[in-house]
Image (tube, rainbow, N blue to C red; front, side, top):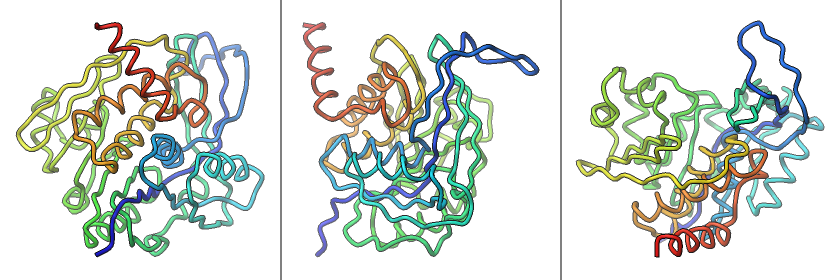
Length: 301
C-alpha cells in the first residue's frame, strides 16, 4: 500500500506589486503612496510556501506561468522554500496582483490572472503518494472541480480555500473534506444572511473553518464546534495571512495533528505573517511558530 504523506497544492501564482499608503483609496481618490516593492505571491503559491515552511510533509505545486521575467522570482521563491514544481508554461503573461497596503496593515488587492487562467483539468499530475490536495479559486473553476474529483477517487483529503468568494456547485462541495473560508466567503457559499454558526450548518462538508481576523477562527466538524482565539501581534501587513493559515493547517494535518492543534498552529503562523511585509516573504517557519507558541505559553504561566 502506498504511504500517503505528501501535499499537492494546485493553484495560482502571481507577482505582487505592492505600494504602501496612508490609507486605501476610495473610488475616484488619488493617494500619494510611499515605498514600492515586488513580492512573489498568488494564493496557491503562498499556500505552498506555507505548507513547506511548516514542515513535516513533502510539498509539491501545480501552477501555470508565462514565459516572461515575472515568472522567475516566483519559481525562485517556491524552490527556495522547498516546494517541488509541476509548471505548465503558458503563452499568457504570468499572473500579477496590484496591492495597496495602508499604514494600519489593511490591504486592497486587484488580480490580473494571466497564465493562471490557462490551468486545465488535464494538467493534474499523478496523485500517487498524495495525502492532501489543497485548492483555491484563482484558477478556472472546472479545473478545481476536476482536481477535487480526481483526489476523491484516490482517497486523498481535499482541502478547499474558497477564495475569492463565489457560489460553488454542489458537486464540488461533495468532493471537499475541509472547507476554509472567511466570513464573506461563508455567506456566499451558504447563500444566506444568517449568523456564522447557522451558515456553518448549512454547508454540507464534513469540516468547515471560518477565519474571523482578530476574532480568531471557528470550525464546525460534524456537529462539534471549535473556537480558536487570535494571537495578538503588532500588525504590519495582512497580505498572505489567510494563505499562511491554510498552508500551515494542511501541513499540521498531514503530520497527523488533531484539528484543535492544527488550528492553533495555523493561527499562530497567520499572526506572525501579519508582522512582516509581503506575502511569501512574511510566512514563518515551523521553528518560528513553535518559539512563538512557547512564548505565549510563558505569558499565560
